[in-house]
Amino acid sequence: MSEHSSNNAQKDEQKNDFIRNIIRDDVKAQKYPQIVTRFPPEPNGYLHLGHVKSICLNFGVAEEFGGVCNLRFDDTNPTAEKQDYIDNIKNDVEWLGFEWAGEAHHASGYFDQLYAWAVQLIEQGDAYVDLQSPEQIKENRGSFNEAGTASPQRDASVEENLKLFNDMKEGKFAEGKAVLRAKIDMASPNMNMRDPVIYRVMHQEHHQTGDKWCIYPMYDFAHPLSDALEGITHSLCTLEFEDHRPFYDWAVEKVGFDVPPHQYEFSRLNVDHTMTSKRKLKQLVDEHIVSGWDDPRMPTIAGMRRRGYTPEGLRDFCERVGVTKVDSVVDFRLLEFSIRQSLETTTARAMAVLKPLKVTITNFAEAVSSWESQKADSVNARWDDDAQTLWLTQPNHPNVDMGEREIPFTETLYIDQGDYEIEPPAGYKRLSPEKPEIRLRNTYVLAVTEHILDDAGNVVGLKATIDPATLGNNPEGRKVKGVIHWVSASQGVPATVRMYEQLFSVEDPSSVADVHQALNPDSLTELNAVVEPSLANAAAGTRFQFEREGYFIADTADHSRDKPVFNQIVSLRDSYKPA
Ligand code: ATP
Ligand code: MG
Image (tube, rainbow, N blue to C red; front, side, top):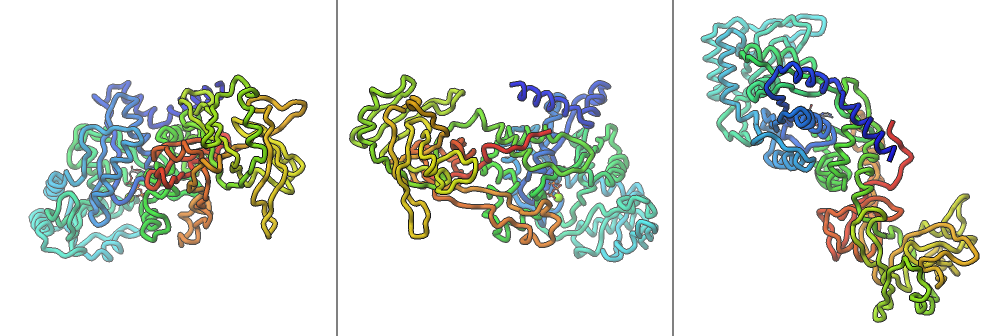
């Protein structure tokens, strides 16, 4: 309890980040009638963990300060964008638990207005059409130490520029033959101010506007003006846009907004062994390195959802990471910590044996025949004579009311191969020839009497007895240490269990030129497990704690009653503690 409340206090403290402090001051000064933020993804892929931080920040501050947050698709580059991405982005934001104001917006919805403003800039003498080739434009931008060279078109008349821009719009130029540039300062120390391109020719259909346009605004032009149009007060973006802020302010000022939006930059979220770039994640999908955008190993929201991560856990993670201007790499274990915390009191317990080893109870019939007279009062059970099964009723959670279920206890069981060792390592607390007794979870104490080996010397089966006096009672005259989980061999259900490791074996996969060299060959292992019957009946998408094994989810794509499939969400414990 005390640990829990101190964690909360810590989270509240982190909410005093520099952005919230700025907004708090603006609210106090009544600078705006309402705080308005936006989340502006480009629909060129699925959202990833990095976007979760931006979503939690933009929607989070709007909520906290009584404002609203818009969802806007920054769709100025039709070549890479698709409606499918738009649909999935919406779904992901909703799943995280956020609601955008009104309808989703599109930068493409403002194309008419942006075009009119481009014309206005030309009329003001603030923009011109450049007919240089892309190579010439690049060369003439100059360098860090050298001013750029003015284009021959830079001082053309307003009339000529208006005509050429209209020609661009009318499709009279091939791609790369003409661009519209802002007329600012070819000697600016900030390269972004050396007459940046604001419109280009692209003979390309757009997923929203069809073939209406063959010129498209550049992101740097569309973004500030879309913000201004929507009345965004605080435009929050990542640090790499810091050098773009002077142009952001220039565009808003030249068009003439009374209440300009302001851009604030925060550091990107980087997590070790994780890739946060839509473009690079797309490569993994396109090359079938993963099964799709929603492969449970992917750091996409779709992948993490299918993996079984919770929205609560992801939001908690973002709160713990906080918002700063300092670039850093966050420990992946903090994410797992938050996910684990969110599952502790919300998931039912159940038993699944991941690597089954068969155990035959040689005294089953005679031991169980006296169960009713020997059981402890705390044991709730019934005998099914036809099935020769003792059904044990167990609560689904030790201290949260999640109902009960019946677990079948039978003559043959499975325990995990790892729970019996012929030559146990030092400190081993489970079964071995020297320590043949252990408690089976929720039922009797078991004593191994014999192990069966295959030709290679592997243990392939055990024979054992149960102590009839130990159903819910401690054994007489001796202490039995340890408790293991088990599943009935005759009533249990075979299941595929997918165990995951990091997708990448290197800490910073983006630093490796060939992504194939960065992959962890053991990122997915499929196990032929056996699960208790209640698990096979679970609805797809239900999360469980498999006792002693970790948290798992019935896979949303592949799980069925006949062929149960579970994905490992996260292990049960880690020595990691957040600072
Ligand atoms: P990607 O390179 O993966 O496409 P992006 O920044 O180009 O990322 P956008 O779709 O333009 O993706 O991003 C939408 C918003 O999410 C932007 O405001 C961007 O700054 C933010 N964002 C993207 N990646 C991160 C990250 N790793 N951490 C925090 N915010 C991010
Ligand atoms: Mg991008």
